[in-house]
Image 1 (cartoon, rainbow, N blue to C red):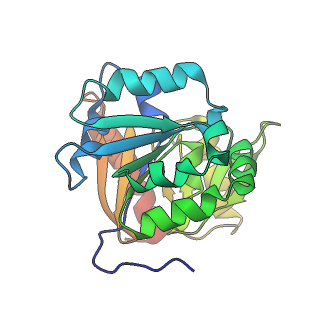
Image 2 (cartoon, rainbow, N blue to C red):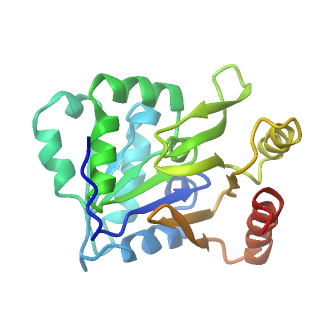
Length: 233
């Protein structure tokens, strides 16, 4: 069992979508992520398993983070079978999990015990960032669209309580969420738009962050309204 260091600030940031890959010219959320690290020049590692290590996705990561005050690196699926992967993870201030196919990511991670490594990193105080479908896996459950284009509930690692619905600005995602609420399948949860993020500290929601300068109020209001409806704030 992973030992939890109570002196560490456990941090998780969930993005509504694969932000830097779709909004490279406005990397506001990426700068916010880096600012949460203790180190002035933090080490950040991109894990693109869900995209099957898509080359363009990895290149976009470096395009954004290589010009910022940080030390970017990445881990591929082939790296996970190497003993050195543990030493790479240990050196990181931030672990950034890319968006993509949730089932593929879960099945791959289980082969290489990446779930345990991620839990250990989180409890040691390393910042975990999850994007879109990958963010779901840090919660108890998440709403996502599988390969057959059917929306369903997927169980996660449970580091964060409740249910996450990314891509909330998507009409289908929104409809799926409220259908699950109305039929009593879920009773608590959180929805996040594209271009938005929610920042958790020690398992509690600490802040909502918006990247797009335009329609900021709309994005915030959508998140806050859903919180009021689901959590009855």
